[in-house]
Length: 353
Ligand SMILES: NC(=O)c1ccc[n+]([C@@H]2O[C@H](COP(=O)([O-])OP(=O)(O)OC[C@H]3O[C@@H](n4cnc5c(N)ncnc54)[C@H](O)[C@@H]3O)[C@@H](O)[C@H]2O)c1
Image 1 (cartoon, protein in one colour):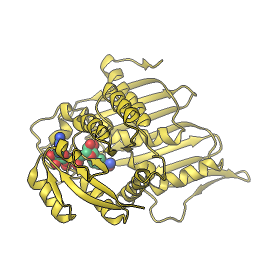
Image 2: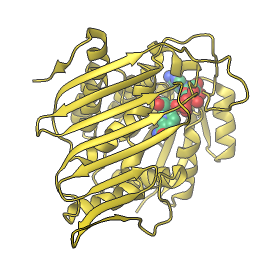
Image 3: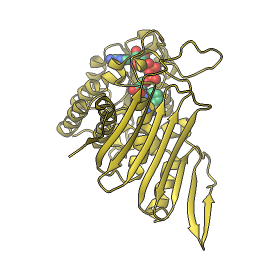
Image 4: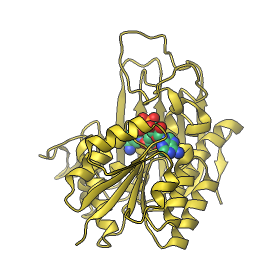
């Protein structure tokens, strides 16, 4: 089967995971890189032997020698670039979140339908081995019907600054940035139930705490602590039409003793914890068992997860697989994320019809 010719748009921090994974896939070839920052694009093109460098994504999309693109830019550009790429006949892997608003998400969905191309939303955790293992246990009935899930992604200190903390470019803070991963993972494994209501809270009590010394944290490629218009933390209770519920809390900063990443699912036959390390909980012969699988990575492994996601995307481009994270799921996730912000703004539970 022919190699898929790739263009990467946005050559900042996360693009490295895309470049590395494409480079390791024999069915992919990195042809072009685009970034507003030419030096950054050129540096990535040199490192990954890409022949072409662009600073205007429209020029990259006009290139007939590109079959598919990864979009690794700021969130406010995801919808615009995705729609343009689909119209230019490219398959698209767009980083999470799909975009900033439900309206944008619906416009991207329409462009997918009109173009006949595939858009894969970068819900990378869906592709990871832990998730696949939990799914196989679920498919074999070990967990039963999941009626409750709980997820936390707490950073005691970790506002990445730059565009991440500019609500115009990011669409929000920890909820839309890291909350999206854990909410999506729970929702996906719960069987993607339809959302019924959301009660959410967001807080802007602590700011970005750029004054704190002696503690390192993730920073955007263009780190700037001056401007911060996003929440510090968010929490939500999400109710689904099938009666299941999901409780979530996330932060860029919080007076917490330590960082916390937990993803827990509770079913009527058993339970599963994906984070902090994969554990399956069952009952056998009147005894409760906590089972630890013998696998390479008991928690999400960044490099392996991205490799799995990108290998899958290449097969989608070759027409041999359907994506695990289609645009319709990106739309539903935007409804949930925007619903949490809306509920917080109104100070009450909101309902979906
Ligand atoms: N899947 C994950 O685990 C994960 C982790 C981190 C970031 N992300 C997502 O990846 C995206 C990028 O995040 P990052 O951490 O790499 O940010 P970054 O700031 O390090 O890099 C973003 C790059 O995009 C470029 N850019 C912005 N608008 C552009 C445009 N219109 N055309 C060309 N280039 C443009 C910027 O110049 C910058 O170099 C975000 O959507 C973020 O949510 C995903």
